[in-house]
Image (cartoon, rainbow, N blue to C red; front, side):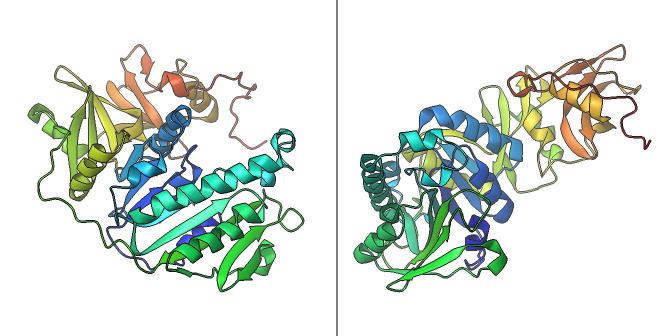
Length: 376
């Protein structure tokens, strides 16, 4: 969460391109999506292929259009010089900050591991530095206490590049320790001072190097435009600056003014997903996607809503059948305390549950007395 305090020290401009380089499982990326403007674009990257699926799932659940998920090594960004206004690197580390929470982390620790991690972190920093534009910012963090992976890496970066270290205002009650070495500032979360995990973070600004990325005038697009017969779907969003594309059997909304950047990313990187899946199309039928139900841009006038109690809300998320008290047939959005949960299709005698099978609750639910919401 401290990443937000660093983010707020950065001058707020428009049309920023932000990279979360080591993004899985997605907590930092979803946090960034809530902090950046809708005119900005977030690129959420994860190098380990087995971890990309959980990152993509959490991005989908956040319901934003202005995001691209990719699976690349930091070196793959070398041809994107000066593209990013902000890069966040929560680097893989020796994990000393996890000792209190996870005893197995102690067993995995060794001096050789810390040396390997420090070397790997410098390689990551060196590979990604050219992709940060002049005047852009970099947030570097680890969940370890080892100086070789933290302040020594910061010193190494400063010795090899022209940068400015930026201070982050603190409140005493946070228990965060500020360190200063040769004009470079870092922030330590030590176990005797904070209740959370061990952590280190620093914020720097790039003073010279790659200018802003120059977008080629001609670039081949790999995106397939939406079939014209589905034009009605434009009314499903409360935005007027979205373009729709077809990918497999899905219609995906993406900010129109970021299409050129998406084409560049698709040419240089292994893009896993982009934008917001709004609907699935079968022949001439449109089936609303679960991610659309969670969208911050959803037009609330398109589908009727049904409020569920706690028991039915949980059963819905287990993908079990629930009873719907409505004479309206067709697609309807179900919600709990005003929070959208997903879609059902009311057939009159029953309601089909369209909660994603792979996201359903698998654990046994506790007994919930009826009616649960009335005071005793």
